[in-house]
Length: 165
Image (tube, rainbow, N blue to C red):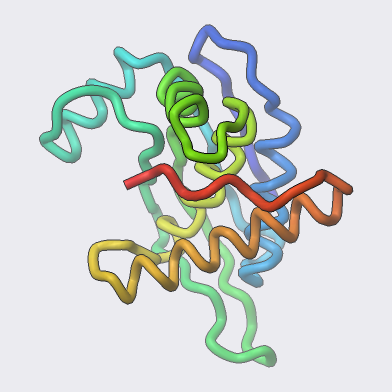
């Protein structure tokens, strides 16, 4: 799996954890190991510009996903995993830090970035949360992936509750 993590945010972030959780999420979703993904952390100004340009919404947001090959997880266990260029996930550590501080289960910026990375991966794979059913499916899968990753690393407690909208 080729995953590039680039920190252009000016903040210190746990790039290794972002790489690891992205790799774990893609393996859990049974995406081909030769697929490619890019994760970029940016400052609030850059995120606000992307948010306005692509969503026509004001202010910076926490995560944005830009799919390329529109890969989907295989529908059955025996199916060949899809391979290709997944796309880009853009994270904003400043927004992540604020969300972690304001969450009912207060957590760190890095924990929020880990959750947002999984959220971005799921968006790249076609998941969304526009309807209540989609929201239940996507956030349930997101929590299962983050909890599984945390458990494998011996980290205590469940994943942070979703803060992304």
